[in-house]
Amino acid sequence: MTTFNKICAIVTAGGVSNRFGSNKLLETLSNGKSVICTTIEKFLPFCDEIIIPCHSDVKEHIENVIPYFLDKIKFAQFGKTRQESVFRGLLECENNGGADIVLIHDGARPFIEPDTIQQTIEKLKEHKGVCVGIYATDTIKITDNNGKIIKTIDRNTVFQAQTPQGFDFNTILNAHKKLKNESFTDDSSMLEHLEIEVYALLGTQSNKKITFREDLN
Image (tube, rainbow, N blue to C red; front, side):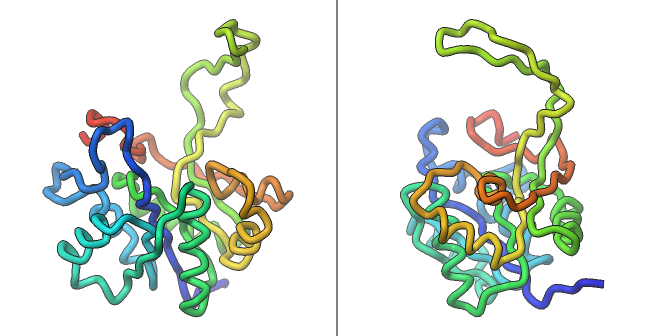
């Protein structure tokens, strides 16, 4: 059975939270902890190294709140885009000796279930890329630029991507190097673009990304 000598996670934390109104990663959840620290602590039991591309205020907050885990945590400079931030995280991991696999997760998804993280790791024993998500439950319609409905598509084939997205480390690193001047909104689409198979892993409805204040609950 395949075993991994080193598992790295990249937790993205470089966003500006325009729609939220303040830095949502520093908001306090019902557990009394911040969004970003809650997210990080979900990955600590599974990962040998966690790299966080982030702003200086987020870095300072993490260092003050969970200093006892800083032996596992490293920081990277955030980029102008999510893709650039992830790439910088991957390069930081490469500089630290690389990894067998990497889990890439949104810092604003603190409600990720530990079982989902474990299942992603297990799936990577068989595949180069794994994307967690859920199948659409609403009817999905395609519109034109004027709002006119063009067609309704089969929602049973619509998979709404979440994170973590897990990858063979060298595979996703090489993808980022090849496509560094492009603009992709998630990492699995980069592998899809290069015709490298990515497999869907069913996640949970609760693994929502915090975008608005009501999402904190």
